[in-house]
Amino acid sequence: MTINIDGKALADEIVQSVADKVTLFKQKHAITPGLAVVLVGDDPASGVYVRNKIKRSEQAGLRSIEHRLSAEVSQAELDALIDALNQDSSVHGILVQLPLPSHLSDKKVIESISPAKDVDGFHPTNVGRLVTGEADLIPCTPLGCMMMLERQFVDLSGKHAVVIGRSNIVGKPMASLLLQANCTVTVVHSRTQNIEALCREADILVAAVGKPLFVKESWVKPGAVVIDVGINAIDKEVKRKLVGDVDYDAVFPHVSAITPVPGGVGPMTIACLMQNTLTAAECQLANAAAEQSLTKI
Ligand SMILES: NC(=O)C1=CN([C@@H]2O[C@H](COP(=O)(O)OP(=O)(O)OC[C@H]3O[C@@H](n4cnc5c(N)ncnc54)[C@H](OP(=O)(O)O)[C@@H]3O)[C@@H](O)[C@H]2O)C=CC1
Ligand SMILES: Nc1nc(=O)c2c([nH]1)NC[C@@H]1CN(c3ccc(C(=O)N[C@@H](CCC(=O)O)C(=O)O)cc3)C=[N+]21
Ligand SMILES: [Mg+2]
Image 1 (cartoon, protein in one colour):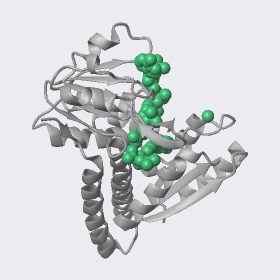
Image 2: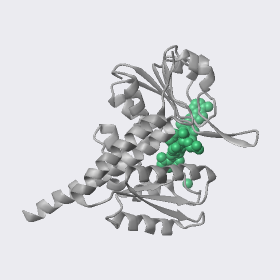
Image 3: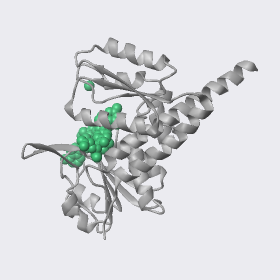
Image 4: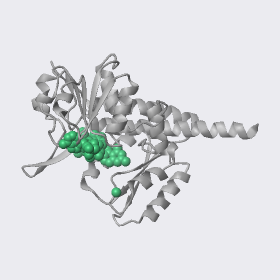
């Protein structure tokens, strides 16, 4: 019997546990953790994502602040906004929705966010800490995938994990976390030879390709656990439909567990964003307290 890994249900649990911790945090410090989301332009696909973020922030008891900028905003204007958010002590987390329009630099923006407020975990400082295993802020999508895997396995140690995709936001951090969890990790990408055979070796297969229904049943080892990160909008009889990078129906009978799309990794990403916002607020308060006690000496 194959298990459908219900990301929505697990996300509900995580958001509830964040909400409980936020209640305690507010009682103790009289501060509400704040998350600032910056959206440039109006990409229709980001609409649902942003609505879900706002809904989840409310459930978690966080303050969510939105900044919607025109698609024509200049790099200097965007830099000024991020600077202001870095300075604003009521903002604990900053997320700039990527990718940005082509006249703006993703890299420049990522590097301008204070590492302490970088709830995406994309700043080079946080990427370095992730690789050395000492990160507080871990990229939300890979973190959500790890939580689902940890539910599925007693121990990830020694499992062969194959990650399809090597982007900075999903594939690379995912590979780092799996390695940290003592998996043997293979990363495959568009230049990989014999990709199907490599994937068929996987005990854990993580697909982050961005190609609808890319992974077929012949790509999976019987009994494998499959995590489908892909979110691809396809048009089906006028209605927009979301499908993953994995051909769920074809793969399902052969594997021991698989995440659906929608309702899998997506909701977990947002739940982890809530958790990272609380973590960021906790770390900022602890750092402020440490600085205070230093100035007293
Ligand atoms: N559920 C969630 O919360 C999130 C979902 N996503 C979704 O995950 C998917 C991946 O996102 P992201 O990592 O940003 O995508 P990118 O486009 O940045 O990266 C895709 C990766 O897949 C590889 N790839 C592309 N084509 C092939 C191929 N034919 N064979 C093998 N490898 C290939 C690329 O290889 P190369 O490097 O050689 O070009 C690249 O490394 C998308 O569908 C995205 O929408 C993304 C973020 C969050
Ligand atoms: N700085 C930055 N950080 C990100 O984390 C980031 C980003 N930019 N840019 C875009 C991608 C994509 N992404 C998604 C998160 C949740 C869902 C999600 O909740 N999906 C729901 C369904 C949504 C629907 O119904 O359309 C699901 O899969 O069930 C989708 C996509 C985060 N990203
Ligand atoms: Mg760009």
